[in-house]
Structure formats: structure tokens, C-alpha cells
Image 1: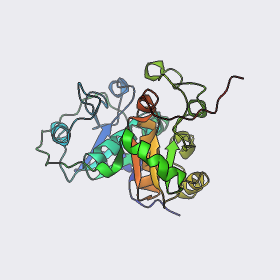
Image 2 (image 1 turned 180 degrees about the horizontal axis):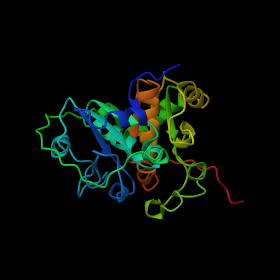
Image 3 (image 1 turned 90 degrees about the vertical axis):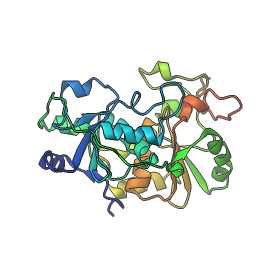
Image 4 (image 1 turned 180 degrees about the vertical axis):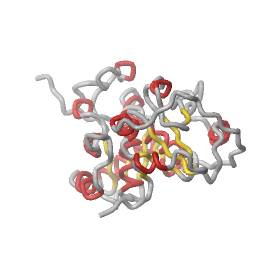
Length: 286
């Protein structure tokens, strides 16, 4: 079984296409200082917070601002955009999902991300590439890719009826309610621990190999089907702020071709703090 979409390139392909016109590399890291220490030659940097998030509201910038961002980076609508980053492509996947949601086309991920490129001791540069600004055309959001809190609440009935699925991609301890945040991320903790009722625990890392690349299509199909997450269901994925769930969204929608997969970007930092939202908790100190 093969992946259903041609949305991955390997490190060899990137190395061979560093100077190919129309191929643009974008690095998106959690640690925004990594880019400065050395990046793939020609790659530009995107900061997922300052470039994607509204400066005041808890929301994203609009399609017009996304077009302006791409224009500032000198990207043309026909360019092939290759995204990569740290954390086994967490944030590159987040950028892939957000740009797809914003209506951007021609997106791919470099399989294995920054981790694999560096492990292979490939060429890096500390130079900041300069590209002539472009006028990127108008964009339209694809709301079918995003789930909002009230939509998730309504989705619980579909999950109970066996027509929908919720995928919690956080660690088992976060899912059970033993902890309220990932290790070293207390600033993103919440008042309540646990998970959304009916969610299946499928940690994002189970979809990857040790080198950060995605597992085979057969392995991924078995992983999700084994938890009852099948292509016939309306699927919503979530984590803490949607970076890990973007990775799982990419697997389900782009690699396996599930027709209806949404990313709940509010995730547990919203749900766990929201008044009136039901939770389940399986951890007990007793």
C-alpha cells in the first residue's frame, strides 16, 4: 500500500533541488533560534507565532495577511513549497495545516525534517537568503479543515453513535489526566486534566520512525484502524495547541486519504479551561 497523495519529498530530493527554480524551502521550528545556527541553503524562516497568529486575538491572521506573508517571502503561486522543521516536523506539519486551511496550494513536507537532514550531515548555511517580493493572489480559507470548540462538543454525539472519531495525540499521561501538560511545558497547562469524552489515545509519535520519518502506509493504516479510527468516520484530532495534532492530521488526511479530518486548534488548552465542557479522566492516585 502506498501513500495516497504525493506530499512528501526525501532529503536526497531536497539536496538535488536546492537550486531548482520554483522550489522554495521554508523552515518552521519550535525553537526559532535553530534556523540561525544553520539551515538548508536557500530556506527562509517562518515563526509560527509571530507570522501565523493574530497579535491580539487568540486566532490566526486572515487570508489577506497570509498572502502578504508569502509575498514578503518572495513566493509565487506556482512555486513548490517544501516545509521542514524540528521536533520530527511538528511545526512544519502545523504550517502545512495552517497554510492549507488558508487556501495555499503546492505544499509538501520534507520527510524526517531538520532532524534527518542534520543526522545525515548535509550542507547547511547561516546566510539569510534574499528574494524579490511578489504579489501573492487572494486566498480563501477552507473551513472544512478546522474544528471549533462548539463543533467538537456537537461531535460527541457522532462519536457515541459510531459515526465520528476523536483522536487525542498527546502522551498517555496527558490523556489519562495524570499530568496537565507535556514535560517542560507548564506555561501551557490547564485547570483540568483528562481528555474529551470518547477520544482515542493515539500519540503522534506512534506514526513516526526513529529518524523522524513517517511509518509506511500499511503500518499507519493498522495503527489507526486498530483504534477504530477508519476512513468512513468524521475525524477530529487535537492535542494541546494543535502542533502535534497537525502531524496526525497530516498522516490521516494527506498520507492515508481520510476524506474528512479536522484539526481542533483550540485543543486541550481551550477545552480543559472552558466552563461547561465535559471531560473524562482515567488516572486515579488511589
